[in-house]
Length: 222
Image (cartoon, rainbow, N blue to C red; front, side):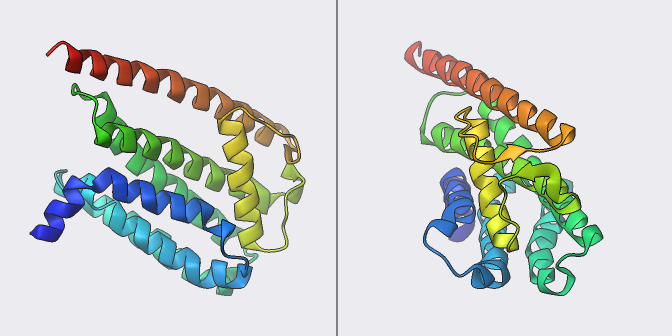
């Protein structure tokens, strides 16, 4: 019961920490084989556990769906060494991750738009929403990267870890509309999705500012 209460009380802080370590652990880990074969499954296990709190008070069906998706995103990286380079496997892996992240994002966003007041949960959930979008777009681009190496120019294909980290970087600078230009989309599909990421990033920021201002106004008027 104490663990459940802790997960429920700190759900957004835990999810935020898990997302940060999954996306940016490459800053401190340089062994790409260890990164892909060991850290990736461990990272997804941590993410699966960290997302439990978001679904504690949700319906049984939502929890079952989340558990199935969590099992997939934990098991699939373990199988990567056996199916590396198999297009069908990589497609299924990336689709599973996109669905997993968007599924959690929807629950986080539902919490953000509920009438409430500004607190630490709102701040943490806001950051979680941005990083969940980033995760989903990274795996969306991996579908194109592995099906057609010409989909991107400047992408490192020497290992799955390098490709993933390059796409995290590319999606981050695109979502935040920085756009350095060292990695660029090379097909019409990836160009259009890159444009979509920029639009989504701006839209999320505008909506988020509106939500926070509304909640702050509700709090000050009480």
